[in-house]
Amino acid sequence: MRELGFNVSAISDAAVADAVRMAKSKAWAEQNAAAIAEHRAWIEANGTPATDLRVLKID
Image 1: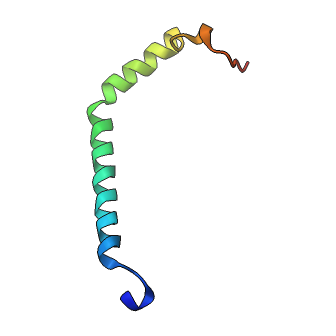
Image 2: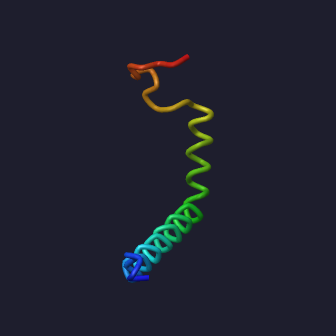
């Protein structure tokens, strides 16, 4: 691989770091799924906070 210009160590380090980041992100989303759903339901029922203060309104 080195003869092709690939740094296998750097590639594997980046792949492991990416896998860890994805696993942490998935775990966070699973742990907070109820709160996220509750927040989305609140916004659905009440609209986003400070909607009336937006400068750019697209309707």
